[in-house]
Length: 189
Image (tube, rainbow, N blue to C red; front, side):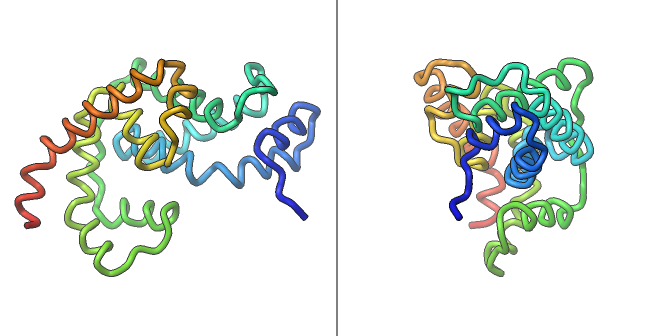
């Protein structure tokens, strides 16, 4: 039996199919939590709350257009909710133990090799802090591209910005991350 696409599942949700909604939740909860976790600077509770709010929006599906791809719409909702949380309260960088971040990565990115595990232990907190130091516009694009695997076109559709703007923000964001991480890289070499 062939697995239904996100768009097919969303069409079923629109007519009240709770099984289809459960399938969408199962498919997207983990990646969405990982995205929001990184986007809000490692605040797991806030990320979980935003995932729940995002999924409620999906269930209400007021803005979904059947002819549009589902995934960019889903991440647009999540991104907008995260932005709203940034506006309503300053997001403080969470100083969690490195093993908690690694546990999150295990849940959503698969089992790392021993070498990857050691490198993540050394650089994980530096990368998280560097991401929080990027401006929101750059951080969103970087996280969607490198952590969520979105294409440049999907990012443009998700954020409702031109493709050229996505490319520019990605380039600037990566450049700024390199600058921010340069001291951490010297310690690894």
